[in-house]
Length: 86
Image (tube, rainbow, N blue to C red; front, side, top):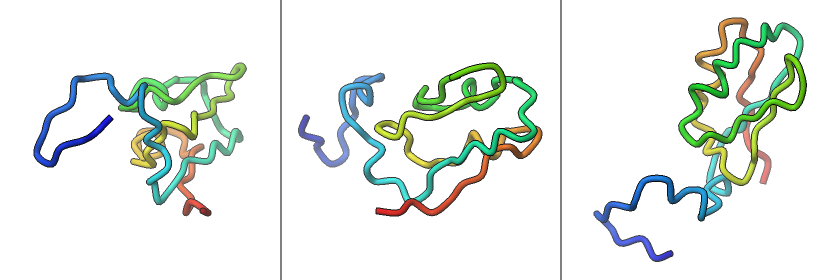
């Protein structure tokens, strides 16, 4: 898909484009104090947080943009943003 400067894309097109390759930070789920509130999955603007088992979540690195909203909203600070190693 060609992106034109100043253009607007149709909503939901990130599913067709892997947008995770340009992030500077990535979330790490510590899985120590999770209370299974699902706030991380709810707040993620890309919908790339998924549950792998009770109180265990992960993210899809192909789509995570590293915005940190999941870490910011986690009420028990169980998500840490770390510098992305390229």
